Each structure stands twice: as C-alpha cells, then as structure tokens.
Length: 527
Image 1 (cartoon, rainbow, N blue to C red):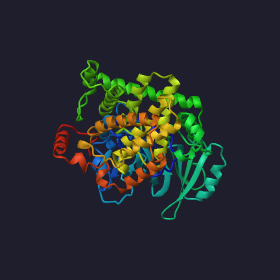
Image 2: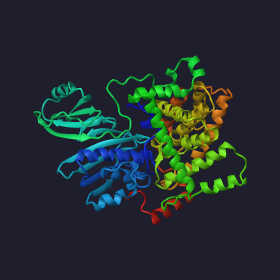
Image 3: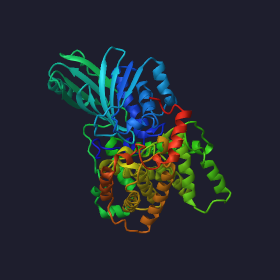
Image 4: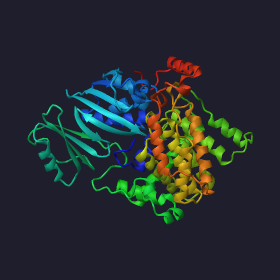
C-alpha cells in the first residue's frame, strides 16, 4: 500500500504515544472516535458499528483494543489517557446505545470502520473510515459524501444546499484556509465543502446562503500539513549523491525531511526527538520495575532475565542481552496498558526502542547524537510508509517487526559512526531477512509470539548493523526490498495477516489459552 498523505517521522513512524495492544486498533480508533465526537458536538447517544466479516476488525475488535480506543475517542479521550481501559463501560453507563454487526460487505481494506451515530442534537451521521497502519487513519466518507481526511488539519465540514464550488472559491480567498475541496451529494442535491486550516476556522460561514450545518473537527495528528509543502525526497533512491551518502550520516537527510514535512526548524525536530526518547525511557523503566495486568498471557519476565544476567548465569550475549531485557520490558509495559511509543506500531513497539536504548546505554553518545539516531530510524520508516505498509492486517508481521528491525539497524549504524549508505544497507539486509513473516498472535493478544519476534527483530538489527559497517554487500537496494515487501503482502493469504485464523493462533494450546482468557476477562471492550 502506498501512502496518500506524505508521511511524517512523528506522525507515521515514531508515534503515536498511546496505551493498548495495537496502534492499528487501539490508537487509530481513538483518532477516528475523536473526529466523530467533534462531528457530533460531544459523545453520541447511539453508536452502530458494521465490521466486514471478511476483514480484521470482525475478529479482533474486542481483543486488540478497537472497542476500547473507539469508545474512548467518542468520549473525547486521547490515546494515552489513563482512563482508556474503562471507556466501554463508561460509554455504556453514560446511556449510549452500542450495537456491533458483522455483515459481508466486501470492503477493500481489512480495517474499515462503518459507523452510524445519533447525536444529542438530534442529528445522525454516517462515517466510513480506515485504519491504515501505525495509528494512521483516513476518513473516506461522511454522510455519503466522499472525503479524504487524515486528521492533519483543523477541519471544517460545511454542508450546503447551494453552490458548493462558489462557496469554496469564497473560502479560498481567506489567508487562514490551507486547503478547500468540494464533494457533491450522491443524490445530486447539495454539497459538502471541506476546509483545512492550521487552527479552527474563524471565518463565519454559518450565515452564508444555503449553508445548513458547519462542524469543526480537531487536528488529531501531532504534525500537521500545510498548503505549500515541498518535500526534498520521498524514497531512498532519490538520495542519489553517492559521495554524501558515503560520508554523511543518514540523520542529515532525516532532519532535512522532517523540517520540510512539518514546516519546523532543526531544533524543533531534535526537541521532539528528545521528548520521544524520554517517553521510551519511561516505558522501559516501567517495564523493568515490574508490571501486573490481569488480561494478558505473559507475566513479568524481564526482571528475572536481568537478575540472571547480572549474576553471570546467562551465556555472554553482551549488548544483545541488554537488548533482550529492554525489548521484553517495553513489551511488558505495553501489555500492562502503560504508555508506550508505537515505533512504528504497538505490536512492534519494542524492537526499535529496545535496541536503540540498549545501544545508547552502551555507546553513551551526546544528547544530539541520540536524537539523530532516533531520527535515522524514523526516516527508514518514512520510506517504508511510502512504498509499503506498517499494518499487520495488510502485510503480516513483516510489516511490523520487519519495519522495526530495519529502523533499528539503520539507527545502530549511525550510533557506531556509520554513513547513510551503511545505514541503508543495514536496513535492506534486515528487511530481507523477514519477508513473508506471518502475524498470528495467540489469543488475539499482542504478546506471543510477538515478544519473541520483537527480540528477534532487535537481534536481526544488531547483526545487520555490524554486517553493514563491515562492508557486507546487501545486494538488493532498499527501495527494491520495499517493493518486494509490498508484493509479498499482496500475495499473503488473508488468514496470515492478523486475523487469528492461522499459524500459532490456531494451535491447540493457543485455543485453550484464548478460551481461558475469555472466561476470566471481559477483554478490551466487550462486544
């Protein structure tokens, strides 16, 4: 899948900052819910959900946090809100009627939300939205009008019975308006004018002739867009200065890209990287200190690993053993509903951060060098987003831990003083190693085999980083590997892509675990 919104390091790759088992489910659904909350002017009274029986949401909406996230967003809560786990019960106790249906719809995207809401104002709305991977979303229809909303602007939805293009032309004359588009009614009556701006639209349009309703939706992405955006490159192959690639770090290009993407300065970019590193560090410390949570398969294992490591009872793995402990701790924090950074997804939230933090503790670089390493990994993720996908529902585990390993490998090369060319080589080798990897979480919890695959991803990254530094030939350029990555995704059977219908998820032991979890827990939201 090729991204239709230019990806940002802090939108698509290193983020969102969230709670829950899955960014595609837990965080993306929050963002969709927040937009519907704004559309309604508050929490809706009626919520009717249709999930395609052949898609991913029909089988995973309870266990991977879709219900929890969506209901939290409908309540106006953010993705890192401490109350998020309680959102299903809070929404129902508020008097909201909820119905979930699973008809055969033939939706092209496996994470398609078809949502009908009744609002306290007496209005009703129908929204169709997609979770496109890593917490990113696209709203494709509002009340039958075709739209393309990513949450990257403060957005005004202006319904009019009069001339939509004329209203759009009038609005485009105002300096605060960044984008404006018109969607005609499928019935041929009226139009929807969509306005994007940096701040909520201040122009008074409610009194314009023919306007029947105006709804203001917040910007839900941390990095917004702007009308005059010009990106220096979008793919690794467009960075074609061989001399610079061989002599400069990849972070130079990462900073250039994110400054252009977000219309921000170098210092603002480094400052945001510093904030993200601090959140990652807190997630690690939370995991290492011990976590408990009823609705999970695996207990606290990182503490025992560290204890044995310190006492010399483990085989000497050096930096790799630190990575194993760090990856495990971050995954445990995620599974205990603590705050984590999806980097690039919640399911792979530990491969890149665990490997990076362990390397930082070993190398002890300057603050800026650490921030640059994070941004290098982020740029690799941008290339993935542009040519393929992070969504396990689209490409299996190769899309999640595979991308995370490529990001980590590039960042580790930079920490070792390697060049941009070497970082790209390491990313290419690491992604080649996982093509075709199934996504088959046991019990529909993102724990087993996810923990082991995050650890393996970190080991893959460390191996490929050293191989690239040593001059190993990656043979296939990174962009071509990404094209193969996308092609493999398209060829994978639906059952192999995060449905729980194949692989380890269908083993007798996994079935027993899932049954025991259903008996002992209400899961993430009920049905």
